[in-house]
Amino acid sequence: MNGRTIAVSASDDETVRVWDLAAGKQIGEPFEDHGAPVRSVAFGRLPDGRAVAVSASSGSNLLAGFDRGDNGLRVWDLAAHRQLRKITHDDGRETDSAGPESVAVGELADGRTVAISSTPTDGRIWDLATGAQIGRSMFASGPVATGVVNGRAIGLTGCKKAMNELEPCKKRAATVRDLATGRPFGKGLAGERDHFVGGAAVGELNGRPIVVSGTNSSIWPWKSRDHAVRVWDLGSGRQIGEPLKGHPDDVQSVAVGNLGGRSVAVAGGGDLRVWDLGAGKQIGRPFTGPDNSFSSVALGELNGRPIAVSGGRDKTVRVWDLGPPFP
Image (tube, rainbow, N blue to C red; front, side, top):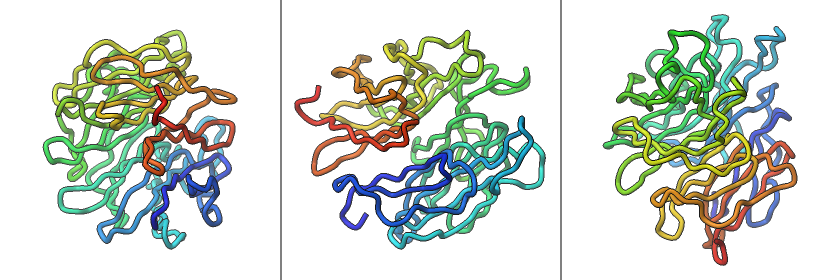
């Protein structure tokens, strides 16, 4: 942004913050409007070229029975440092009261910028320029990600929990939607009922569109304890190769990109590891932090060097150098 490499973070302190990674300093005042913990944030660009962040807040607790905030999304103009739009997720139905917990941004073939958000019970696609919902609400219960398959923008919603026998999570680890219409795209990702996606990212491997996912065992802690990273072929919905194992805890965050000509994933699960997706092997040693919580991770470049940026429960944003001499 304006020649600077930035990161945008969300926090339980009900704010969204923008960081200058080269300077290691916050840019401007925090964005404050949610009135509730901000669970997720995504970066994108509007059709007019403006850089924006879209943040999601879950302002209610179904078990405790209290409300905070308005269960919505906010669109922030990062250059002007102001709010552009408020999108309320609650349409008056009791099942919506938990609010969105995850958000991702994508671009349609016609140039529109959209967001896909998910609550514990449903997911929605939004036109960010107008704030209007695209298509009907759909099943969702976990993390979301966006990508492009055969020229079509798609949104993925991972299965985080299974509430009854009728849920798609019974047979699918994730469902996939066409972001332009909100309709199902393909077969989704084949999976077991006790496999729950903890984090997901869409990328490419040898010319094929793929999904890289983590594992969440918090719903049924006696199952899904492999703490593995999985790679899926988006075309067939089937897993590619064996799970990538080694993380000491649930993999809650995943990012995909290119490192030295290799397709890689960076995943956080008790530590931060870099995986060579083509070889199915770990690259280098794991990165560790003070409390080893990596609730979010992103890949980027700073001053010509590849980096990973992570956020954790210790209330910090950290930058990890992936350039030489790593690995």
